[in-house]
Image (cartoon, rainbow, N blue to C red; front, side):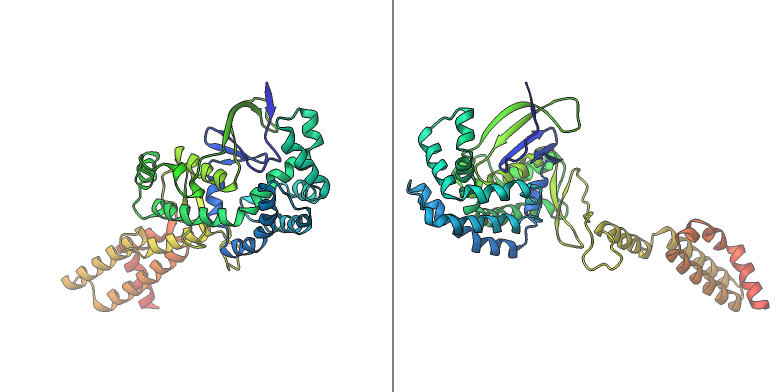
Length: 371
């Protein structure tokens, strides 16, 4: 039986080949985990102010004595958390127009009563599930948002160290190299479920489904994994990305992490460069910088033509076959042409080499001297 693509389930991922689908949106595997590395510290600091207000309600729910008096403030904090994350990757993929109205209804006395009914009912039929859906939503979202600030901070602290090792100069970014580095960081005797909470593998369930993506007419067999925390979901996406050769890289211009899907040591991301008045991307500016550096290198083709011509002029002058005045004019012309070629790609690829030939340069020098 073919199922529709997963949507409106903020803790569920569908993995297929080298892609992951989250909230109905498909991206290269590892994208979500990589984007999380870029969450600004000030966002986490703000979450540290909001999440404890949700966590107060969570504590009473865990003690089987949910306090209805905490609902208004916890609900307001939950709305502020999602609003804060609306434009923050990877949470910008959440359909806030769906979640925010649901929160305002779930964080109510009705929602709390439905939550208690769901707790007492155990397994629920489809009809019963619909009747207590606000309670189910409340029971899912309170733990997620209550622990979110701590989870994201732990994730960034742990995964950024590993990402920096992947990003190091000379690191092997092939699938084999990524596996070898992972083995050094997380050796076989290291048990993830005994590590710090951000590495725990408990409370995950997986299933295999035939899924039909929006706009496609052929189903795909996907591995669907349901998580209980964002940090577990994001870490899994990060590691699944490594399995297919996807790894984070830090942009040398804006300093943000971006995902590479091959072994190349790409230096620049495709995002807009901060502060660039022309609205260029980091990759565009990086390419210009790279070209400038290549042009300054002694072995650059433009420089090689210039250096070869200068050597010829010096040798002919030393042998007495070229007078000093003509040599001086030729050198001045050659330098001017070389500088023009560096700044003008069309000229460099056009007549530059021909104009730098010994005979052509000498003829131009004599013409200038006779004027």
